[in-house]
Length: 445
Ligand SMILES: Cc1ncc(COP(=O)(O)O)c(C=O)c1O
Image (cartoon, rainbow, N blue to C red; front, side, top):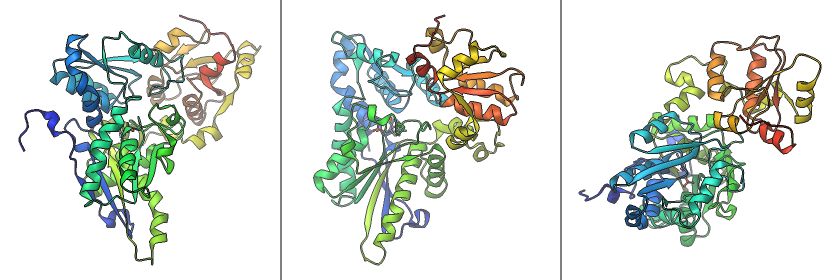
């Protein structure tokens, strides 16, 4: 294999059968499409190259900078492609949550601009979000950047319709799998592959996987966020299911320890979601003499997610489980154990005659600077987690009101502080967004 450019090595990834001893399905052949073996390491290599390629020459005459709203694999692929073509790369994102990826991007020479927005990914319907405003500015005529626009660019889908999908059919000797399973981030890979498979055989069933409500699996959307993606069409999927971060890690561990596949969390989520869904199908097939096949995508590799695993499953890395980590509190536990207050109740509490609660704002410093509850203290959630390692950071005599963007993180932290023995900690329901929407006063720094 001899190439003139590393870009020629993009695509033609292996399709590997998972040992039935591992997945336990007796009538279904399960295959992994190893997009992690693309040269830049992920499922995004194909769309990054396909989106950027037609504009590279013009970009060199313009600002010379490729820009994308990405905090992960698209940014990684584009940073490498930009460097390869003598261009710069700038990644614009709401907070980067996976430290290894941030450091890797810096190593690749990327400029990173982190904005004070709420969600990990672009939400075009949220016109207050700085990321949305930045996206609009990039899309307006006259922008001199090469903006690949992965959330809206049809070439994101096309890359998979021309490459990933046809390769699966070819490697199955011209047959279409009965099932195709993929995690949904921008929806590019699932949409492109599903389109091609359906052209060959409309009977194929497509299962889309997203992260469980308010859970975080890097690279994919939550069930609430998925409808905001420009390329997402619910008609693409026969069903959509959610996977928790714990299940994603379980799947990843099976792929890593039993299958020789150095998968990251979304590959694990796809494996877990596929096996869970196909178990019932497998039972129906028993005794019919029929066999089916299924394909899922392994999107990227494990190495960038060690801190992600360490936070959620420290015992896998030989560390003791931390009792006082927010990841140790499930959503159901947070709802059952934490006390939450509405905006009206919080305002009465703050203005009341009893001891004034200490209001702790867990958002990032930009968001806090822009607008916050008067007198509140800004402790970014990661720093707050560190503080909890050392025990309760407040006197038990001080009542505490925790606020975050939408009231989910603060609920977990409130549950934790309650577990740690704090007698009066409450979470602001709906977060600063609900406070703002209720017209309650906010101050600017
Ligand atoms: C690790 C990982 N898994 C899954 C996906 C989802 O792929 P898509 O954007 O094609 O929906 C992404 C997208 O960035 C990703 O980075």
